[in-house]
Image (cartoon, rainbow, N blue to C red; front, side):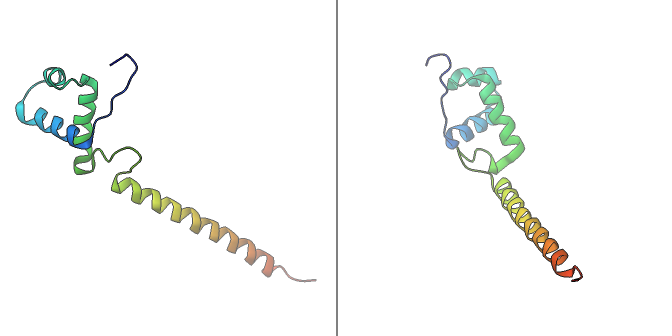
Length: 99
């Protein structure tokens, strides 16, 4: 592989690599050499799995369930704020005393 090329790994490979790291007691350096994965990449996988657990490695273009829910709630909040602002303007227009 040439310098600058990035390789993608599937979720199963990442999970197996993290499982090997936890079960064998090998260092990140040893395991990264055996798997042919850069040490920093493997360290990132371990960190992400420790942080997110079962939600780790959702795949390209996909969000974790918690992030998807947060995104949906933000959209709903934006719509509710827009509706509120429209109602405030309408109330102001209709409550003005007519001359």
